[in-house]
Length: 318
Image 1: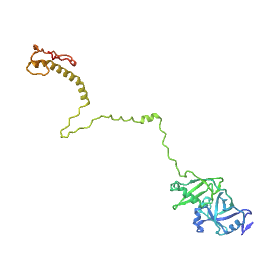
Image 2 (image 1 turned 90 degrees about the vertical axis):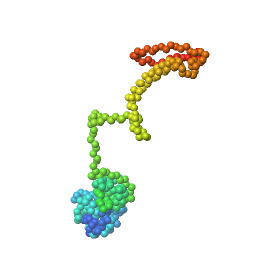
Image 3 (image 1 turned 30 degrees about the vertical axis):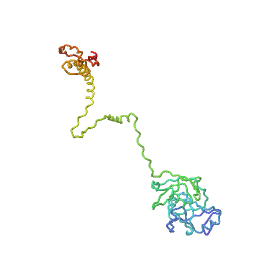
Image 4 (image 1 turned 135 degrees about the horizontal axis):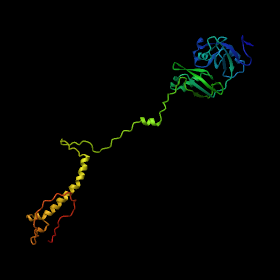
């Protein structure tokens, strides 16, 4: 059967056209989406068929066995020709003027899609999710195995469609679709550090911890207000020696006390008044004891221990 001189299949739209990039018709806006421009005869044929809207089409390159899907933007192309985005021609391995077969189809609404950027530069965008949502508004359908182009900030980013659900081709018009990202193609995992040797080797490499210095109080330097040099502080050794000498000093002090108590009667006999003693009373005089000549004391080998309260006593009654 023929329609306007072109063969077509009854009940569905299927037609072969020669494809050309969008630059041939001066329609650069279609480069940012997946819609093509078809001739007016295709609109007449589609209007006479019971097809689902929005109109979706299957594109097939029989020479390279490539299949993709798209929508339609306008019906203003010359008869026997269609204009399509250049990135779509690259996906289908088409050259200018190659034959492509166009067939109307009905696709299910997508629920899940997995994307994979070609480079890590896409992830460096401040808000890649918002950019992707804005770009996908110009798309009507997605096909597994295709690579779409996202233009942003005068740069083109290519993204592969790895997986789509519930079918290999889905419609994304007025649907809530879950989007997942795979690592970029040029992504490299950071190198893991080498596995360390057993614990014994680590123990050999570790140095023993340094000993902390002990706290020594009062080790500063003193200065006098009058400008004179300060006397050096006694060392701990000298203090220990002085402590050892304290018992000896105490014993010598005891001896001197005992000697002074023994010499008190001699002092009284030399005409000195001592208040509170028996020598001051006129009635009774204490008998004078003969002074004994002191013999030179022999050197003692051991110093006597200090014994308190060993002096002589005097009674007020006489």
